[in-house]
Image (cartoon, rainbow, N blue to C red; front, side):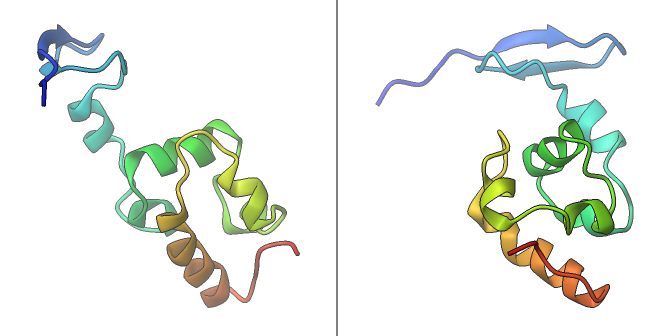
Length: 97
């Protein structure tokens, strides 16, 4: 198995990090902007960005989508659905059928 070579990068905020992919996301910046509470705080960074990039930042907004639609968002995987279902249920909401 071949390993991709990691390259040193610096983000716009001056953080330096190594990455082998073309993904421009700085891990330090991503950790700093992770919410401390709420349903977005329990998601992985790609899943959280997928929702945010599609304008979903509240449970009410999330309830306007079906599970199938949410899974179409780039960065959202099936592992996030149980966390989202639970958050919706705790707030008396659910995914759209």
